[in-house]
Image 1 (tube, helix red, strand yellow):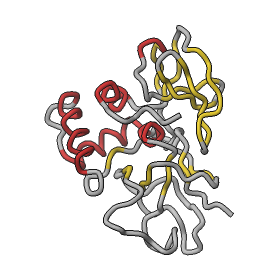
Image 2 (tube, one colour):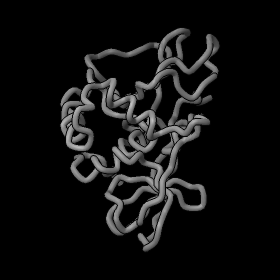
Image 3 (cartoon, helix red, strand yellow):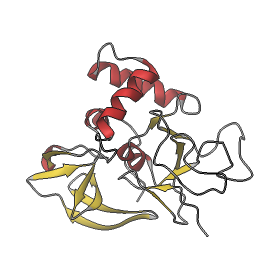
Amino acid sequence: MPLQNRVTPLGALVADPARGLVYGNRGCLHDSSGRIRRGYNGKRWIACQLEFRGWRRKHLLQPGRFTELFFLDEATAFAAGHRPCALCRREDYVRFGELWRDLHPGDLGADAIDAQLHAERLTDTRKQRHHMAPLSELPNGAFVLDEDEPWLVLDDELLRWRPGGYTQRMSRRSGQVRVITTRSVLAILPSWRGVVPLL
């Protein structure tokens, strides 16, 4: 039976056998029996490499340890509110920080980044925060909602997200859409490499 540790672009944790290309965490979210009890624990939401220095746990969701999360790809992790890990993805983290500095002068370092992202990703009621924008102006890698379903922006198309991959395409149209990806990450995406998924 799959664990409830696959993350959607909406930040929700679902049980699905698909594991994805990106690993991460947002603190300990499970109880001693491995059941998910909360959506996050703290402001540090990170996206990691699947493998790093041969570190590997024999069992996932161990009591008192962080909850191992899996994302389909980096665009999904960004939409869910995560940023590159400063340890296992040091080069990506440094690059993210450089791009961040241009957007938020003076707000440097992981704590400042995490505080800003946390404010952008959640409302006061702890629901994912969305905003409206013209679809024609969104960069590759952004996620939008269409009829309550997450879709990835890629060139002239939108790709429908599913835990195991992208299952449907439709042409990018004009007009305003509800954007899932936070405003700061949205501004970083045009300069970010590797966010476009392998199809």
